[in-house]
Image 1 (tube, one colour):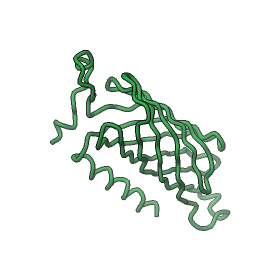
Image 2 (cartoon, rainbow, N blue to C red):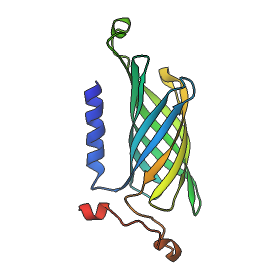
Image 3 (tube, helix red, strand yellow):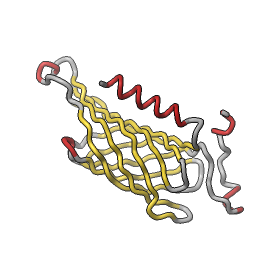
Image 4 (cartoon, rainbow, N blue to C red):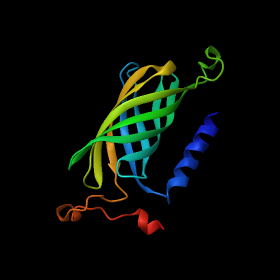
Length: 179
């Protein structure tokens, strides 16, 4: 199941590379209930100005011979848009997996993975090549918990603002040179 999930994640990412504008992001993730700290990676595809499709993966390093990861495909929709910042709502179907080390494998039989649905909101800066963001998420299902993500998005598609004052801050579009 793990290999299938990762393969789907890669196929979805590669299928959108030439089809839409995209950005990439990294984040630190803090889970409030389990007190785990992890790292996240996401690719942000922007088919419209207010809607984004975001494949993502989060990895929680080993704690007591157990490590965890989750893979999801979030949908983000802008709620409030200002000149410098945007607030958005997100929904993320996510697959969670716990992997046990060799010593604890005998204590856990079967697949420790499950699907859950996350909901939440985020706040991101809209200008510049490096755009800081912060997100709060709540996860239902078996893995009821909440987490906070803070990170940076590297804007590969450039700024969407048309005003003359913002053009000089525009990042060159890297995706157009790959065509």
